[in-house]
Length: 242
Image 1 (tube, helix red, strand yellow):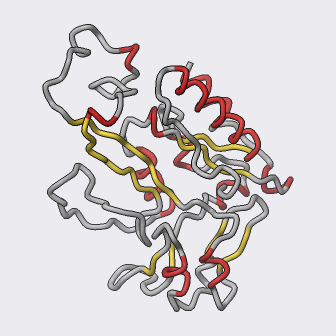
Image 2 (tube, rainbow, N blue to C red):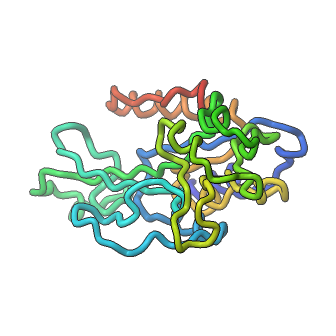
């Protein structure tokens, strides 16, 4: 059951910081429904300013990309149906949960793919290596953290990140000029709590836990998807990211 999985993996208290255990996220886009709960709760918990409300004109996503004021971003990707099978049904539920009426063949030749993106907390983090002030550090759990009271806003970290995750906050927003990105909810983890995005995810598309456990979970999930006919299912560089 989904609820049981979330309770066991995402909502129990832990002592990972105290025990200095390497942790991470396992993100499974095959069950993401694009609800944006992770994106919303990230802004609420971290009190991040909004990004404005400009409509891009080509997506339901007005955020656009990760940045200083967007630490979680749910991408809405429109794909030609001929490029792959739909794992979720037309209403965002698992295909097995669709009724015969709602599961009819759609005349629309496209489908939506949802992917919740976030900082990778790289093992060899370009931002950390480029920082001249020591404001970017590695925490006890292996995550990469920006100490904003030490950051001088030089921007070296911004150009050193290959994923475009970190950025400087522009005027007239609070703390303008400083570099910001996902903190991996380090404040919550020190209190034994799960990162906010993982806690609210209703489908276990985002799972928080020990790196070794997540790698095993990911490998098992890939095998399940391949057994279901999704031969291109794979993990993204599991040994180099947290």
